[in-house]
Image (cartoon, rainbow, N blue to C red):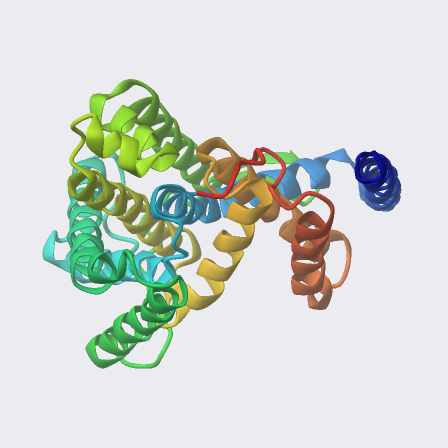
Length: 348
C-alpha cells in the first residue's frame, strides 16, 4: 500500500515538473517570436519573405542530409557520422562530371542543360549509394551485434577515411563550383528579391523528400523497412531479408545525400573536403529536432533549422547563429527528448 502511494506521488510530481518545464519552454518561444516580429516589422514584409525563402532553400539541403541520418537510426539505431561526408562526396563527384558533360559556367545556359544536369545528378546519387552500401557491408554489418560504442566509433573512423580520401583527391582548398542555375530573380520591392535558383532548390528538394515519403509508405521495400525498424526479429521471422533491407536503407539515404551535395554546390558555388562535418552537424541537429527516426520530422526539422539560421543572420548578428541553433537543440533534448514529431517508444 505504501509503495503504491509512493508511485502515485512520484507520477504526480513528475507530471507537475513536466508542466512547469513546458510552461518555461512556451515563455521562451513567445519571447523569441516577439523579438523576431519586432525586427521583421521594422525592416518590412518584403525582406521577411526573402529571408524565409533563403531559409527554406538552405533548410531543404539540411533536410536531404537529415533524412539519411534518421532512416539509418530508425532501422539499426546507429548515428552514421560518415553520412555528412557522403553528402560532400556527392558534390565532389558532380563537380568532376560537369566538364565531362561539356557544361561551363556562363556558357551553358537555357533548357539544353537540364538533361546533362539530371544525368550528372543521377550518376552522383548512384555513386554515393554504392559507397554507402559498401561502408555498411564492410564497417557496420560485422559490428551489428556488438556493444553500441563499437559501431559509433567505427562511424567516426569512416568519416575521417572519406574526408582523407577527398583531401587526397582534390586538395585542402575551397573549390569553385560552376554556377549553372539561372541568375534572374523576382523583385519584392526595394532591395529585396527572390532568386530563381532559391525556388529551384526548394522545388527539387521537396520533390525528392515527397518521393521518399511515398516510397516508404507505399512500396513493398518501404513496408519492409518500416517493419524492420519496428521489430527486426519479428520482421525476419516473417520472411523479410534483414541484410537486404538495411543495405537498401543505407543506399536510399545516400541517394538523397548525393543529391544534396550537388544541389549545395550549384547553390553556393563552393565546396571543400571537410564540408560534411559542419553540414552533417546541422543536419543531425535537424534530425534530432524533428524526431530522429521520423522521416517527416527530419524534413520539417531541416526546414526549421534553415529558417532559424537565416533569421539570426538576417535580423541579428551572424556570430550568434551557431549559439542559437545548438541552444535550440539543447532545449529540445531537455523539454522534448523525442523531438517535435517523435514518439516515445520502449527500448528494443
